[in-house]
Image 1 (spheres, rainbow, N blue to C red):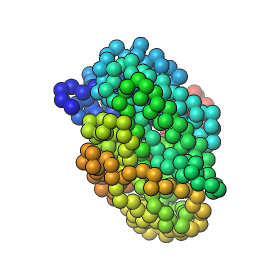
Image 2 (image 1 turned 180 degrees about the vertical axis):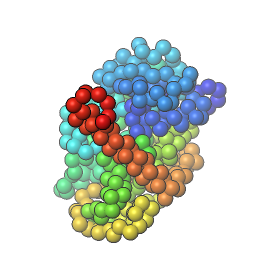
Image 3 (image 1 turned 60 degrees about the vertical axis):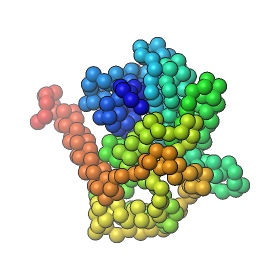
Image 4 (image 1 turned 120 degrees about the vertical axis):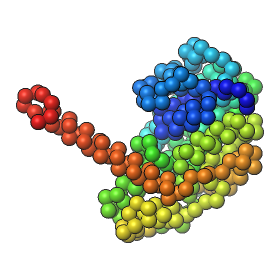
Length: 329
């Protein structure tokens, strides 16, 4: 690509979305950020960032709210319910597939050159059970199935509308800025408290990818990816869960003992269903983040975030208990 590049990013105030907006701006792109709460991007404010407030249900109307046309890329990251108990809500999960198609249709009207849909590693688990008899699918497979459905619907509509599309299958993402209850955050917080967390046996293969690598991977797809191709955004070489957890422990709290095998591991990630080398072959992309340093940065961010939340709770408690109705006692 040459000249001034323009992108639309949905879900731009989320963990990955905000990191993507930040990196696009750093690389000189002009970004139209679609968000529910524009104030969440206040710290990124500059003349090349335009915020568009829209709920997922309003994505079909995005062409009326975005005054420009001819975008180099339309990144669709928005999704309602990406971890925890929300996985069980199949109505909520499946509605996202329609919203994704609305986003793609908007991308067509906005004359986008490419639509990038962000999938999830959990799709591989869901697809495994679709082609394998028996087994015990986890509730996260509802989320993975909804993602797979959204991907297929978008691919079909994109073909009909002649809009080039890519799917980015994201590995398990972690990093500073993530306020979710994903495994990395749960593990780090337990270690910071000196607690030995309950763990699965740990011999299965996993992949954790730092958020800064994720957004670089997404941009590489937009700039150099082959048209209408699915890419895995993660490491080319995998590690066991035991290795990832042990390395995390060694960074955060090396004195805490680890007890693998106290929980049953029902995760079935079938990596044979994805080409982990494709993004490297087509664009030269590789993960660059140093694992120890990225875990350290994440742990420091979580510690500061938890301290801030604790102080805010104390402030609120002081105000409530102040009989004068004034500020802090």
